[in-house]
Length: 221
Image (cartoon, rainbow, N blue to C red):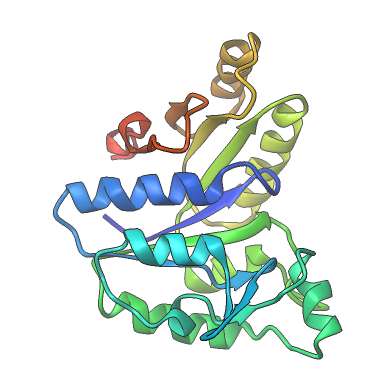
């Protein structure tokens, strides 16, 4: 199994939740798995420095022990778009730094689950977006679709741009955010329009439940 780049149709659609599920699924297959959150906003100041809740969760669930700074090299305290947070702190987000960190992680793991920030085209700097990072890492993409009003348009636009990038869309995952009676119909519509497998439909779960039982990567083989 190759490493994967997890992106979403928007922010707050469950990318970390699904990424943890993927990590657990890969671990279940006997693989050494690492997580990476290249860029994170909304970090909290700790005795060890700025820390991001999502990056810490990836670190906790992975079975490859890595320094936090390797997993999450760019941390920003304001919960705003990364490129704006970077501008406010006079930081340049350098894709070469991110690629170097990824290669160090990859050398120690069978699989690396790389979680993006926000959606597919979130800017990193004046010229590059998260899509450019995924292309530089040359990773297949998994799209997390937050099932709510407007998700069909967001999903299809994201899919079109992912395919335009030249990277393979490994599949997409429907994450039910609202338990809407229309969820099943929306999933069926996306299955009709997206030329990539649905790797899982995750119902609305409580904080003690994991996405892993609802994910299936076998359809991507």
